[in-house]
Length: 464
Ligand SMILES: NC(=O)C1=CN([C@@H]2O[C@H](COP(=O)(O)OP(=O)(O)OC[C@H]3O[C@@H](n4cnc5c(N)ncnc54)[C@H](O)[C@@H]3O)[C@@H](O)[C@H]2O)[C@@H](O)CC1
Ligand SMILES: Nc1ncnc2c1ncn2[C@@H]1O[C@H](COP(=O)(O)OP(=O)(O)O)[C@@H](O)[C@H]1O
Ligand SMILES: [K+]
Image 1 (cartoon, rainbow, N blue to C red):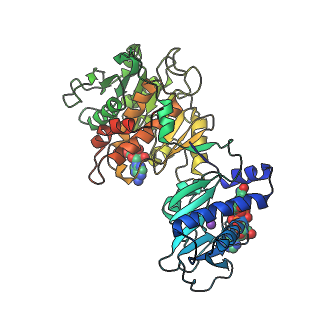
Image 2: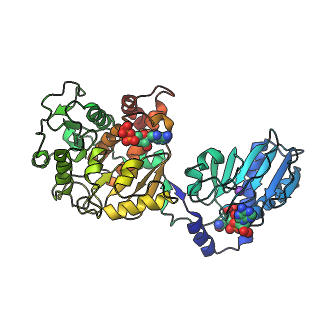
Image 3: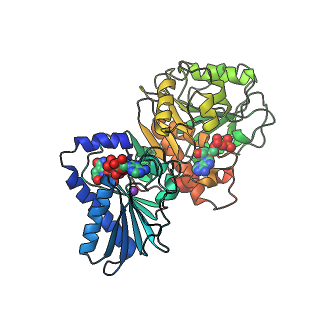
């Protein structure tokens, strides 16, 4: 996992550092110079313009300039507060105007034509917390950031303005980071090996989704569960007797349109995880079923999505979602519910989808609900009630097609069924889901393709 530290947290890390700022600036300058040489493909005779502000970000830029000059680079260091209308010609522009201390607006002259742009810590003008661009920041080809990623490199305008991001170790201790970016190696570590004596019930899940006449979401969720490694997938659409369109290997079990939660609770003996909500509808019977199921003291871990989330809107203090799973079902401590809202559902749950500090907003909702919250988007953010947060950057705009959220719900249930704790299951599901999209087609992707590519995403994981 790659640590992610807010500007404010970084201030505390900095204050706790045993070494003086000059030493840290020296290392930051060295890392910047290395990245510059790499971008330049050489040193002697290359032309570099460094734009340096009055804070530590500018100091990093000046330290880099000193090193580059010694290597024979032709350097001009310009004061960010006093720039000419036209910057001199250069092979590379080093953007060290402002870092995490930026406030206000930054509208510099255009970058020299044809010059590559290297941003120091964050592209100047991009808010290190929110990723919001103020003014007209230069779009970097590369950003070398120090000690940890900053949320602003991952959120809002950050990803498109930062280019390729490299984290340079400058000797600061970020082991207390409360947020991280998930990598494939993490998912590989969390996934249990399939035991030699595996049997299908080891990872059995029950998908309760869809409504008569609206079975697509249910089929996609079931397919997501199948392709993320469930040993057995049971599918029920309350009020629907037969479902010939369901995937072949799925076992259909009929549930009444009303009062179905008791039937589910009666039948969960061998079921390790339940998914509820996609396409269920927002009628009273569906909502009552979701509430009865989620609030039951003796249910397996459950992932709630779509209409299931709407049914929980009034449960503001998490009375239902903090219900304990039955002994032997799921983790002995910690949350047993995963909520997977998109922004609209997040608002319905009382969360703050557009909050400037998105990580804090998801963390707060998880704490209030006593549940893991997976906030969908670019990136997806997962929070545990204990305050841990991960960002999943694997997915891209290819996933913006109807039904991909249903596939994610099923995949998440399958990972819960394989024994992952809710937080790791949510993070792993989002990562695999994003990778599945990336491994499929560039254009024309439909949600079923994402399910179909989950095995490829599982297969590409590094060996643990
Ligand atoms: N946090 C750390 O531990 C380390 C931080 N370093 C660097 O230090 C940076 C943060 O340094 P600072 O806190 O000094 O902040 P910055 O260097 O980002 O800028 C702060 C200064 O710029 C001024 N300023 C901000 N916005 C302005 C605007 N729009 N127009 C004009 N002036 C403006 C402020 O008044 C202040 O004087 C990081 O981004 C990183 O590059 C490194 O030097 C090494 C260690
Ligand atoms: N631009 C994007 N970049 C990354 N992921 C995206 C993007 N757009 C959508 N997604 C992902 O696609 C899925 C959509 O889910 P959801 O909003 O529930 O849609 P649906 O209800 O149609 O299934 C989520 O996993 C979301 O994170
Ligand atoms: K900068």
